[in-house]
Image (tube, rainbow, N blue to C red):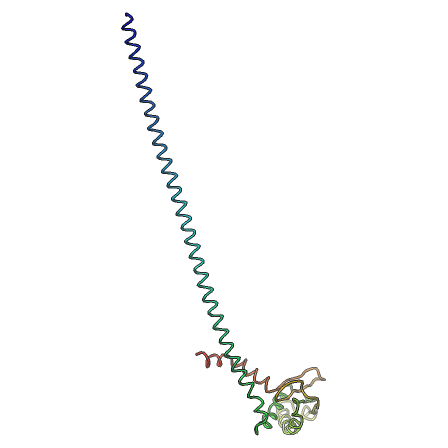
Amino acid sequence: MNDAEINSQITQMVQFIHQEAAEKAAEIRLKAEEEFNIEKLRMVEAEKQKIRAEYERKEKQVEVQKRIAQSNTVRLGRLEALKKRDEEMQKVLAEAASKLPGITSGSTYPGLLESLIVEALVQLAEPKVTVKGVSGQGSMVQKALPGAVAKFKDWASKTHGASFVSAIDVSFDSVPLDAGIGGVEVTGFGGKISLLNTLQSRLMLAYETRLPQLRAALFA
């Protein structure tokens, strides 16, 4: 084989090697581009998922805050309504209380006072008691005592017997109550138990026991 043939074969080999290298480089480049595109798609999709998750989280957060705000609005509305109802009921109570002084100056008060004394005596159910009235009504209480004691004895004879009736001793305490408009305070059991039966206490009792009816009448 002469030099020309040898050079020709070398040239062919070199061309083959270059071609193989070019093809291999193209293959590597193509594979790298494919892997790059795949990784890019993966990263884009992952970022989309992250954005969607963040959006859903914020959307849920907004919904929760919205519900909390609505709940607070409803709660505040209810509290305001309850406050207004309480104010209206307190007005009714104050209006009723303002009429109590007029009751004590009316013609029916002596009979009412006697009934208040009898009621207190019966509730206490003690033979030896003292009765005191509010300031300025001592004489009225003293006048009401005989009739009240007679009714108390009549009640006691039917419920406690003759020995209890014979022990009944109801005395008037001239020291008036510190405050009050009408009614009495009865004290028994050696001064250990006192029962307040004034117009204010009866008003509060009526108010508290009839709250449902009062609410129904005012807000139905």
